[in-house]
Length: 205
Length: 207
Image 1 (cartoon, one colour):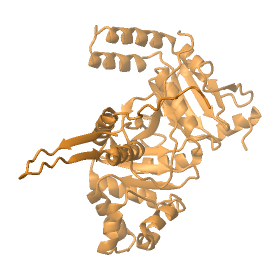
Image 2 (cartoon, one colour):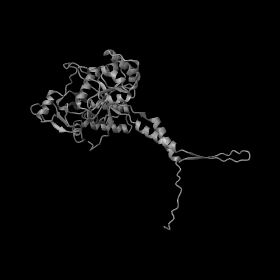
Image 3 (cartoon, chains in turn cyan, purple):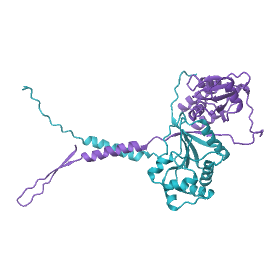
Image 4 (cartoon, rainbow over the protein chains, first blue to last red):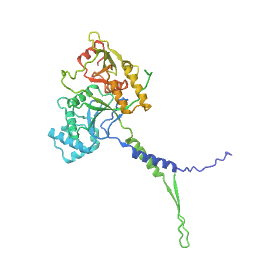
């Protein structure tokens, strides 16, 4: 039997302060951050020293996966609907109201127009799974990508900004193809989305 | 956890009821932690950066207005190859005996070459930057002077040509070096047959 008596101290800690801090942190995050858009594939953009921020609205984003698949997205829902309908007229595909609504609600698209109806008929989770396998056709025979960009520019006017978001490892021929299609449409000004990187100064000149 | 003790001091006829209420806030703090974790993961405060490019218009190649005279002493052609390798040559290409120099994107590589070619402009731009930091000139003034310097007569003119083996990050790194070395005249061009021949003659791995 130990002679040492261990006094049982009360382990009552007042956690009021901690709950105050968590409420403050939560309010801060709720007010200052924006939701990330769900994209078909995760892309790691290359680093650059450019510090120009991408504009929030009226941006046509072209997402290029490392395998060469092209997806597009527009931020305004009305623009998306208008472009879909125009594209449908061009390729003789008519979309029902439910399909248009589904297209409006999604954030990015990337299937050939001919398979768009079947794609929109799928459920949400299936759409996400299948989308990464498709991609907008950019080959010279059926350059639907060029048509999408042309219609988007027609619909949105001069203020629309074209942004290209491609993975670091995307092979150059894919990018060349996209840039040539844009040049054919006389779209000579566009932005490349990059991550911020600092310049290491090694020996000043 | 946090507690609130309430004393109910209502006095009834004859009886004295004292109700001790202990409110436990543990679930509220749990919910707060969950919400914070959700917001931290699903949202972002960082807006992605962009680089602006403008490409030359695809006009008739024989249009004399569009053909800019490139001084041989001021021309640098950068060829992007496989595995993030960078090759460059100064002036006109010499197919018979190509002198393709190999470099990379480290500060001692391509940047050293370009800074060397552009030394005067870089020094002047650094002076202007200092002046701007000390608020001696306004930002608009600074921008105007910088663009004047970059498009000056003696500045190098860089042509970037990427082969099919290069990746997007190579192109972005090359454009980045343009910005770091304050080069105002650069253009992205197609990788032609002459360039492929130069690669062949210098035994550059293509596949």
